[in-house]
Image 1 (cartoon, helix red, strand yellow):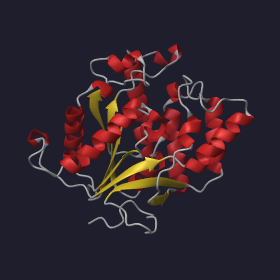
Image 2 (image 1 turned 90 degrees about the vertical axis):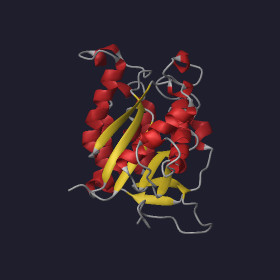
Image 3 (image 1 turned 60 degrees about the vertical axis):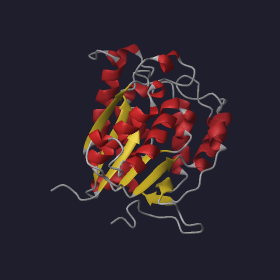
Length: 286
């Protein structure tokens, strides 16, 4: 029997679900919520070592197969491809590909997210924070499109060809834990690594990201089981783990120092100033 409760995560690449709100997705899937991931691209611009490509026709094929593995580990009901191309980091040649997400007309991307919302009919929608987690152009683009689509999905005059109108009730932005990020920055410096140049291609400024604070309106306790599922899902994305050893070890150390909770900023409904943080993303859902 299909659950009456549904949750939609809208992200940019294969692995965003696992290195982002994966534990939350696993928690709600285990509770019987229909959890769906709408993935904007196939991760074509990801750097992949040649041995990982054996048996695959392209980087996109490999990374989509890794996503299928991760989705199974997390218990997702479905993965919906939005059909855009990975744009790479800011300034990369991939930015100019004709199907790159950052080059797509905003109304087109909004329409596609609206169609997914109307098809899935989720009460709760999750996407990235306004920084896109770590300032990836695709993350920022899909954040903006999801915000627009969340409000447009209920309007019968907007995108009438994208399915019957539906009104989702709550919109959240997954927020990486700043205390953990700051701890990671300190650990990287102790390891002799520059926290302003991390990631596989040394193009992420973790120190800058850790300095940006977002309000937290929900603290979701995910539990050891969901955390274990998230780690198993991360292991599926083997092609994206190379070259990140020190960063991953630092992040793992930071994670062990904190409670097993995922943090969220609530964009809709507008939070009441001074109200207590929610413990459940479905709190108040009709």
